[in-house]
Length: 285
Length: 285
Figure 1 (cartoon, one colour):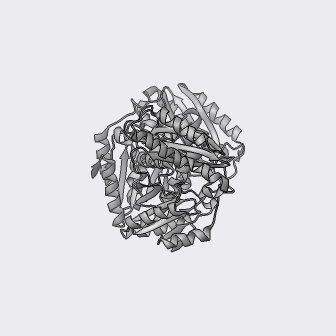
Figure 2 (cartoon, rainbow over the protein chains, first blue to last red):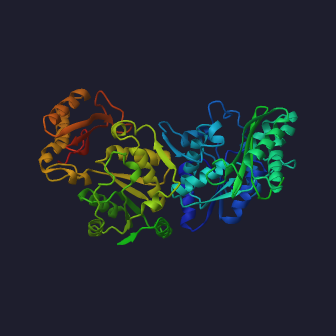
Figure 3 (cartoon, rainbow over the protein chains, first blue to last red):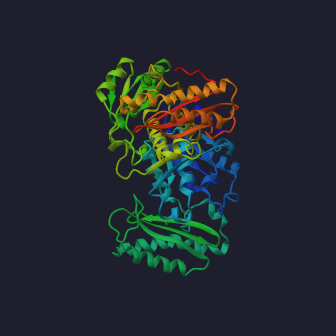
């Protein structure tokens, strides 16, 4: 496995692969890998000749009061884990290359960023789209693979790729969960032992929503209300949002008709967790 | 010469050239060609295997009170002119492909867009950077060639390419002028006969500025003041700005030290004209 730290070297390497007709699949990450990341890399390995994984904790997607400095990092552990699934290249650039002095260009996806996490994390998606576009231009992939745990991120990136005519296929991967159902996240490491049961209310909430849907309920407010009741019945939970939205434009819906997602953000203790579920899809939890 | 109207077809064609190791040079235009455009195409022809010229009057870079609908267009004439300098491909996409329903992604270069035309044309550069990025992703060039008559545009595009890590070289070409010195522009066609002498005050102004500089003047205010007097002494002139700026960050300077540009925008009758000159460079007028 190759480790590349320079932008120029990464571009040259990718360009040389492309000239040979090789296909590149890209997994952008902030590191501190868990099984969810490895699932993305395994999927990438199936569809391409070369799997490039970036590890970069992107400062522009963190708000001033968010966890940028304490975000968990373990580069050596990450390297071993990526190697175990046969990733080909780790791209690990320094901040000074990614955002040099006088940096001033940002990409805004203006509509699908407005709801859900866009409300509680202003500027977050501007940072996400900007870093992803930069990484796409550096890694030059044919495919990029994103986890659907971050459903809005996945939606925003697809919109950007369509709008900016990037010749690149975005692939969404199902959320990977712990044995108890908790959606895998690098931030789960923040959870204290006594907060775990409360953290499980997110997956509990989406299971309940699917159950109500299966029983014929189609009113968004009724489903969200029941999920809210469940989550509030546990200690340490502070609901940011429980929303039921169209999967393409992420507008709130009153009634569940076609493709609809329930998305939750809950602060458990001091850890902000998210989860989601598209009604009617399989829920492996 | 090939005419391509579909985004997908253009991407496929460019990708096939790249796979063969061919170099692509790109000249983005809004059509209605003059000798300035042809100079860009001739330069492109020198450095690449394939010259792609786009013709697209981009709606997002026009303000609500600007000349989008009356912007001059003559596709058949443009085709013949491009053919005369051996351009290889004309890319001529329809609006519905470039900005489909639900389009919502824009690029902002946040600093170098703030001065000069950025003040009088709010949103203009957001439209320019967005369309250029889209075209770069469609045409996949190795080189893109811009006229320096639009000095701020050239500066903004270079900044975007650097910031977003586009693996692409931006080349600036000297302004081409009419026999009387007027900088070539598709908008010159708007000028009435009795406005021509007034239009020449732009090039007259930059010649005067260079002359004062040659005589040892280094105070920006003194030079701008003299240029203002000259332009105001002609009928039909309405000065938008006369500014003396650093060529990289486009900040106003008080004293001319290193690389410095004088940039003008003057409304002559009802036609907004721009021109500029980097002090110490050759002025072919």
